[in-house]
Length: 297
Image (cartoon, rainbow, N blue to C red; front, side, top):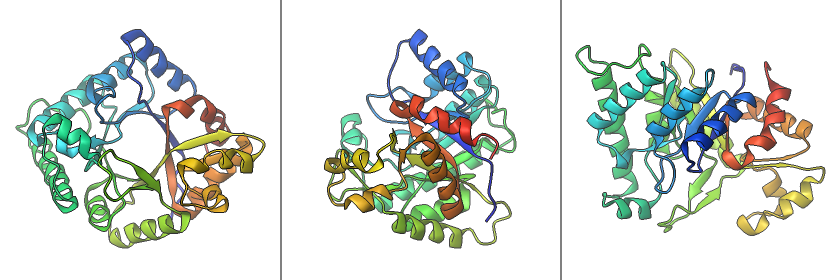
């Protein structure tokens, strides 16, 4: 397993007026983030116009969808959005795709939800149609990037890992799973050992690939503190099924001094292969010194 250089992204989730949005994007660039990403949830910024505005405000970062909900998009219309956005951002787009996990959002939008298998089938159809359409010489508008816009797929389950192994340039692990029966998208964390198993399964499915995919992890908490145990204890009401010791080992939780967090990130790359980490917007400032610590490593 090779060790790729680190890349760091931030998921921008808070809607903002134009000047505030551009200032936030410029701040993320100044802090050293390599990717500015936008999720695809109702109540959050619409991904493609938000990324075009981010591109206009910045020069260096890549722009990503983290991740698009396949159930919200017709593949032909999505192909047009992808190509246009890649062109208007100067070839900086990274296309993140997923099945969606919030049933209430589909119902609010008047869109079908379906079984887990049907949602995976819908995503597979979307991925394959995007490959077909954007790979056609006659498709207009044309994206800038060749041979294609890089594709990230967020996955945990076996069928999703297979789809990711077949099609993704970036394999993203959420580190959480949908609580059974939840319609609002309630998630529970995956243990370090379970994530070991999921990454190992993905690697089995990628045997024979000519090029290794980049591995991404979405970080849910970053807590800079001198007292790791006390900080994690304050989160226990949000992860009640875990012991304190188990919670402190969660891959999606980075906690400690800036140097301790940097060591955690290095250890995760060694253990799992994660070289691309994405943090949520509320932790953008706190994580920035870690980026500086790990730059070039």
